[in-house]
Image (tube, rainbow over all chains, first blue to last red; front, side, top):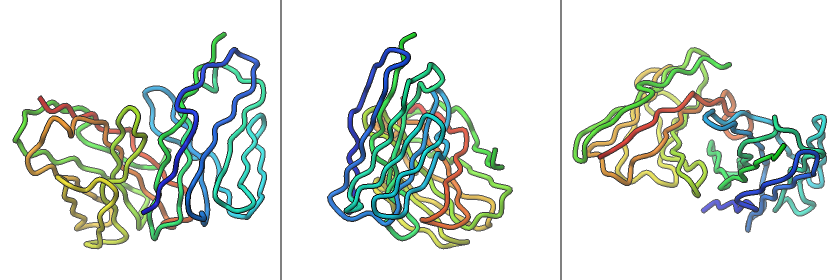
Length: 110
Length: 113
């Protein structure tokens, strides 16, 4: 079945440092989505990637979809304390199903 | 925020008792989902629905059943709760199935003693 691995599981960074989380699949992904969950909150949609090699930016966040559509990454430039939370990728390759990675929990030290 | 209400938001129960969690939406979205979230496991899909009375199993469906008799309501039932079902449960909805964004409810924290 669908399986999405996400690394690292945890990341602590100093405020101002960059951060990257990776999402890997053994099978080709149709689309991949990214979500952010603040501590104590619920996941909130960030973006969807559809095309091979696609790169999208949202302010300090850069999302990439691998050329083979088997991996994706989220990069945050110059982290801020507001970036704290858990970032999830979601594989939407299954019929009607969204299968989430295990998440990367980001802590930003001021 | 999308109109999704989960109830109850918090529940403590004993092993062996039945529990029903309710998800109510006001968005008229076709697709509804139940996930559980546990440390180290992320969000795992329990069951999902692609229409009224149309449901299917997710990754971790054992011990859970669901029903959807109306577009707006999706019920998750634990027939006989076990301590391993202690978790935070999230309902989510989508207008487009596997291509649209998921909107999540606030979550229901269930503790099984």
